[in-house]
Image (cartoon, rainbow, N blue to C red; front, side, top):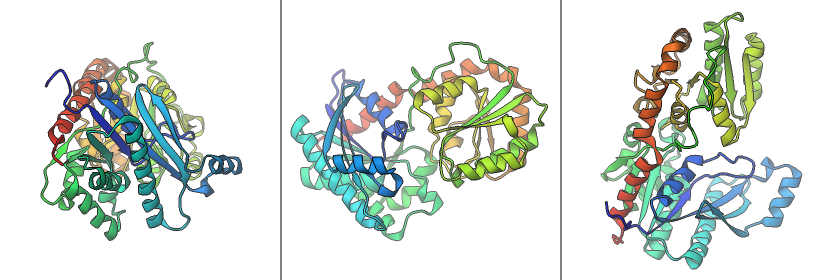
Length: 399
């Protein structure tokens, strides 16, 4: 690769991104932008932050009205980040998507006036970023790359109309990327015969590092971090934990994250008599996620469908093993020397894996350097950033 990047200017369009209320939302999009910027590429991000007014407290809605549809810009570690805040159209998903694309076009035009027309656009997820990138290609003749992350293909969450739109975007994209081989197979039927490259998400191994002090072996602490939705299988995790360990066992479970299922899950924990053996941490900042990983001895997840699993590589970067279901992306991350894979929905297998990991705690503690080394070799910012730059360079001048 040349010392001077061919792709001198890349604009990222994420389909979701960090907000004031959720500063870690879409953190893996930002991590990719930072990785590319560190390779000497001019990098920008544009994001239309459109929200439901019902989701905001009265003061928040009043503040949003004050800022409505005003373009703002911030410098994020030398990445120009432009966004516009507004609200979705109530009870009208299609109109809301169209509004999102329109506002993103505004941002692209404003960004180009201030910073120049980018050489390539990198859209993350077809809906809605890929649609916006396709429109920008037609208007400004900017080539675009799409990375798909969405688990909705496997979960049947996309309507026929959205699948038709996905096919259109994939057909017009100059390069297609999926974050796992499992996801690449799921979207292949919509790709029009185009090649799909698999480039994983990355982890900031400088931030997600081993703890500054030796982990305590007892109580052995399992950690889960994620949205508390049905897809994450947290109720199954709670039941497996209750079956695996008694109140006298020095084993704990921490659950980080928030979501619509949290009250139900807290009630399940009470009904199972888990008491202070299970702790719900709530929504965590990036620093709080790292602190929780430093406290933990293992990460555990019972998800039904995952296209990748960024939190898995974050956990392993700190030196802990993982237990996760065979739900798509994790099979490409977790080898036997890094943790355990169990079938989706198999509570007994999950229970056995947790019991065995607790019993083998000393062996897993000794494996910490090997686990971290695997992440550094395969998922570091430098490694993934170089692969992305090769993709960008391949599409420059194609339009």
